Length: 233
Image 1: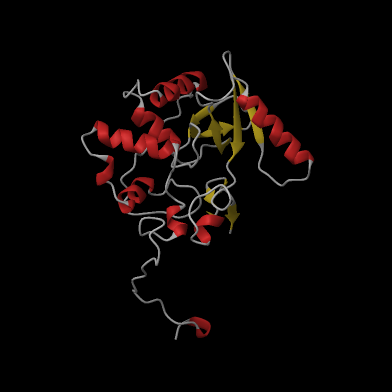
Image 2: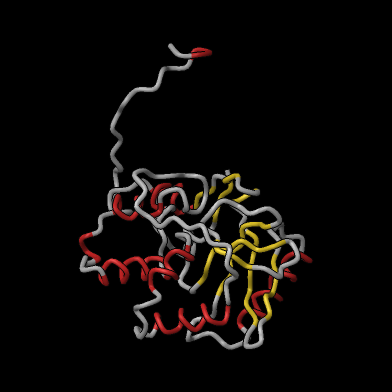
């Protein structure tokens, strides 16, 4: 017996009893990007001559490595490493994201993939580090820089209205006024547009916070009714 009467850890193989997540347990499937992130990864590997169908779930988790949502990490890590404090230009990234969605620009795929950070959701977005005064935005896939925090910034899709970012920011203010507990939000204004951003709820400084979707926990698949609710552990 282990400490305090608990059984010792054994090397045992566990197999998911469902194929909903391609053989993964739902909590591990939560680490995989969907929507925008999956599009970027699929098109990046095809740019290098690998068909997206050749990637299995473990290949995708190896790309996520230690940069996924929540606190789970995966080895060996096959993703990109970044050490870059150069400021990010939101308008330029938004234009590049639109070009990728329209199938026009393959040259920026890897940069957008590095900035995506394995986040979920259908809308284009980046994970970034934002300074306390909100004036500097740098690459998020690296150790946290002094005076910065981890944020997620969204870009509108081609179907969104031009003021989609401002509308989402207004909703966040209404939710907070209604008593909903949520992370800090901000409307990043540029010469061309306004972009909605939210401080990451799965990060406290550089410490990572466990979180899973309700759909992943109950093995019910990703759906608006179940997969869209995140549970912080």
